[in-house]
Length: 128
Image (cartoon, rainbow, N blue to C red):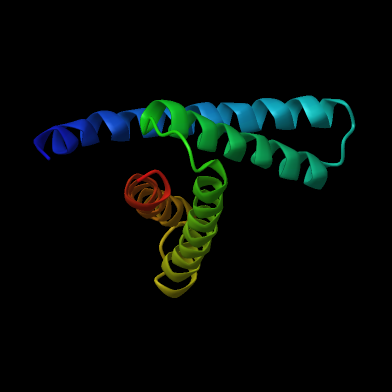
């Protein structure tokens, strides 16, 4: 149990690095597709999906080192990401429109909550 507890900071660091790579993949694919005149909305959908797939496979293999149950893990991963997206959207609306926070402050706090939820859900549910 102690090794699990001491592994968490390293897992969290890896999780954050994977997030940075996902963002880079998303941006690179988006730039490439729009440079080739793919409509922006379609390019966004494709690039976001590429980042999402990268996130799943990198976190599965590197951050949490899990094998087997590919379909089940992927289904849980997608469900967790839908919940996280819904929550962060709701927090953005709450903070910005109802609490009159700045857009940047709202985004920063919502992203932080989403990061913690996504890491915890990935660790305890998706890749458990």
